[in-house]
Length: 469
Ligand code: DUC
Ligand code: ZN
Ligand code: ZN
Image (cartoon, rainbow, N blue to C red; front, side, top):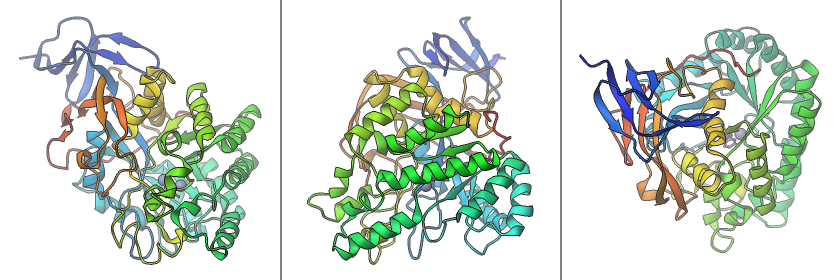
């Protein structure tokens, strides 16, 4: 009887701290040993020339999320997790959104029903609080945090989601009491409303003008306000999808004051710019790049790279928020061609997150391999209460492993991706480095861009309180 179910031999193990040559022994879905001895295993996987990485954790994705009248998100749980698996991600964290007027618990229950039996990779939900009634703040939210929903997002913009300053502070206060981690979408609603109205009055309605309707100052002001409200009640917060230097400066300022402010950025802010929103000639093609905050300019990209390398950023997530382009229920919804205001906000990216950061970051020498692992797997696990089960290669952890070919040249093409969107904003991008095998709890879920098996292997993960705060 072999001692291990699987041995992974001949590769280089990479963690957030170091890299070294070692073999892995996997038993009962967990990493049982990390060793240089020869392992007696039922199955041996040859990892010569490959990196052995902890599976990616994408801590910010949107799946089957209600997105406005007649708008349908392009991914359900089966397609989103299939795409995640093919891209080297073994855990995703989408949002269970509370629709206004509805019970939070009910929304969470309904979201679980959508995920049930559909998962190729493991999954855990953040919450989105849009209606912080006394019932939600006094009972539902505290109970849900205790049940393992230990993080939630709040919005400072969007008519259906925006919280007033008073509501933000009240929600923050409950989070501090319950020790939940709050993720903040920091863009100022009133400023966006003002700029949008002016742009529309001037006839500037193409998707391109989505960018000028939400300039960096709007993000900077809201980031500062969120940080100040958090300081008022002594709460650590995460500023999600940071797009440029101005918001980064607010985060750095807060940290110098001793505040615990965590920061996330995303692929669109290192490889896209406002010029992508021009489309072919200021036409509707630009809608393919409409996301919020919008991609900025080259200087902002450089600022984000500095932040990825110097520790300003803790997390690199996709903010996968997919809508089909040529679809009346997607980007081309009724009204979208009359104003950027009606174009659904969000772009797909769950499958391309790791290849883009690896290629642009590690292959080009902007960040170390260890930092890559930290940003994409280890920190998300620590911050969101999944450590030590996820995010690291350590004995006892789930055998969520990606074998990564650091020398593989690939070109990102829509036809090779597994998401439900009908385009990728990264079409034609050449990358160096690609996942060749993805394993979740000891089972191969994707190999050479083929997703194996039916959905149903992925499980829902209840989370602990953050170990990072
Ligand atoms: N915020 C997100 O986090 N994702 C997409 C759109 C948005 O506003
Ligand atoms: Zn957001
Ligand atoms: Zn998002």
